[in-house]
Image 1 (cartoon, rainbow, N blue to C red):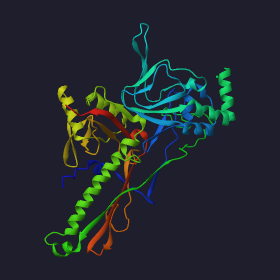
Image 2 (image 1 turned 90 degrees about the horizontal axis):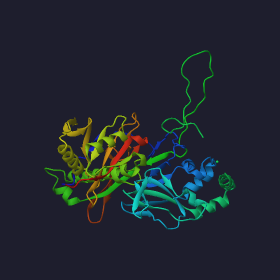
Image 3 (image 1 turned 30 degrees about the vertical axis):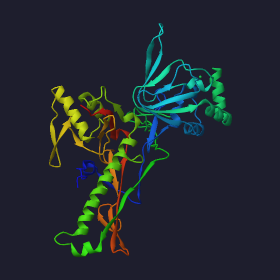
Image 4 (image 1 turned 60 degrees about the vertical axis):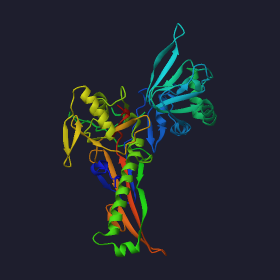
Length: 431
């Protein structure tokens, strides 16, 4: 069966027992209002702006009605774009605010001699058009995508409709037209007040750990198939090999291959779709150079465990290293030797997709619950269990003497904190 791969991701993932079919991740409340950049969350491939982060827009600065901000955040629509797409065009009506969730955009204007000039770059967290919410006008510049990415847009009509419905927002907008939180630590999380040192009898500060109000719950996914074996085969051809056992072995191999594919690519819980937007970076020139992999490791600087890459991406990285006269050292993982970079093993994973344009991604992970990393989820002890979190249930024999078994594998994966996972995107793997 040529479809059987090494499945190193399943081998190195630490598997956590899940009771009740769901695993909740309680994260500390994290936002960084005041840094000038808008912060987003991504879940199941859907990008959402954090309501409190909307106060980074000059028009909403100081507005503190959480219900109205939540309603406003829900009215933004997601738009994915590719490199070369025009997001806004000079001279066209400016009637929306645009938040850059991910990717790089170039602002292009007209120079003093009529030629096109680059006015600046927009990247993750930047925004344009907030003044268009108050008055109509046209765009003074064109915004063109340098890389693929995602923006969130809010039409002025939606904002005006909410202003009519909310007295608090109307009063704030009127105050803004007339003229002008909570403590956080260096990571943008709600601060925990602590006193240190000893002098006299000072009053100790009171505190509590503020968590996200709607924590993420990961439900176990399932890969299933029905194994069919004719009773005649099971009766007559079981020596010297158990035919049902061999059929089941290959069926389980196919299920495990699907399991690894889903952990990488599934939009609900897959690593590629659920990585935090701030934990993504792009290659500088196309192929994965040592500089690019250094940038990737900087995303998970706290005890990175492994780098996962498609074999073609590993080969491309090897070519770039050879061109520079740099030769990665090899490390031992489970009795096998793999190349490494800065001491972090680079493991092959053919489930990471390679696009038609010969680009792929590289993933760096920190693993384990105790390290607040990436963990695999399963449930051991299910009925008719054949392997951990995999069951083989007899379904009977039909009128054609076909023996049927339902084979089910239950699994999922969770990213405990955003900086446990980093992705290097747009990795060119061609020669």
